[in-house]
Length: 475
Image (cartoon, rainbow, N blue to C red; front, side, top):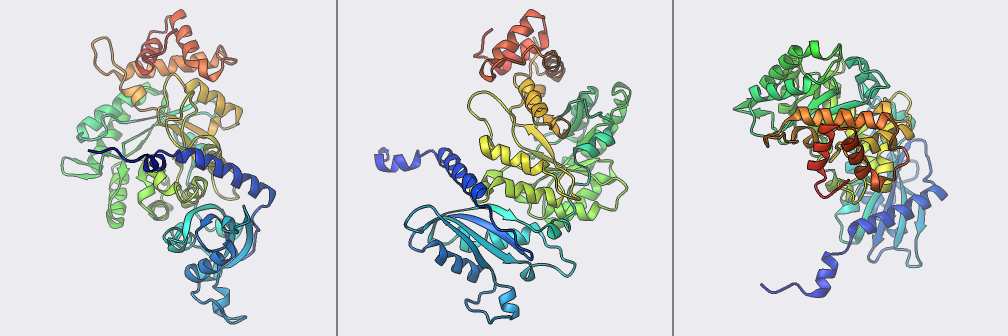
């Protein structure tokens, strides 16, 4: 095989993340200086556009035509005019007038239902449709902001519980860190094995929450979700005496076609599930459907809106918009990513991470905050950093820390995985954090300093976990 020519390689190897960071910095500065207008009766969408031949003003006319009424010159005072989008701001980045921000106002008249509500799916298929992302003219496009009127926000259900409600249901006080974990193995397991795994988790009062992985499908002939749930609930009940009165949420993974999803939700709730998990990125409308279908239950299920694959959407729609709509639809728990030294492991990070956590917890009248889930390579080596960060931001009560492999993949001296070591190591790391011994240690030196403390204090589980998680680090 011949090698790819240099000019093409340069295109393939260009750093998209660096470009996105630059774009976000510019856009946030411009929106801070000149915010999008707030208009009664309209949702204002802000786009970043890089156009091939059209000016931003000309692109606005195309968006109005294709994304709303389909009439370029609606009669004044007509219903057509009431249902036609309009440009309400242009921010040109250069003299070409083809690069910059475009503010478009979409009338509620064209999409609101009789009681005034609308759905996140309708908003996105209108404001993130073909004329924005599918036409060749638009060399690059991003939906970077949505201004939704308060009266529309109030029509959404929002989370049934949020973190405060979850703590009340489980008896975890606000001062106690909330932890969760993920069942491992993540696929190819039977209901009996799910019960055994959950019982191991349940016997440790560190955990408030345990969920299945998105790779474990609900309707398998050898492992149906309802039976997995029954086994998990029985395991939790067997471990109650060891939990000191604290509850444990179990969330099976739910997927499938819409009619299958509701059938499975009702089946697992009948089997005793206290939560449900959806891969929300690829199940548009599912969270809202389940939230509405269960809202009249005495205790609606806690909804974990898993964001596996969210990067498919965030290449076009900024994450804070997706997270806002997921929150409005009713998710109680949403993963962001952990704070950690060195190269990021997961997106979001930096300004995108800040925006994501801010929109999930921002005060919205009548809408509970969505609990932040710090997960994705969260382990004993960075839990102290994450606890300190959540405390600094005043979010510790509203954050749940979820660790999978750092709990379930730590091996004992015989070379076999032993979750008890991972749990003990996490508890020891929390004790170190509470001692304030690492308060002034720079992030990049944190793991080495933690290793030194584990060695000095003979914290064997913590020392072994750090050795396995950070094999290149030394005291």
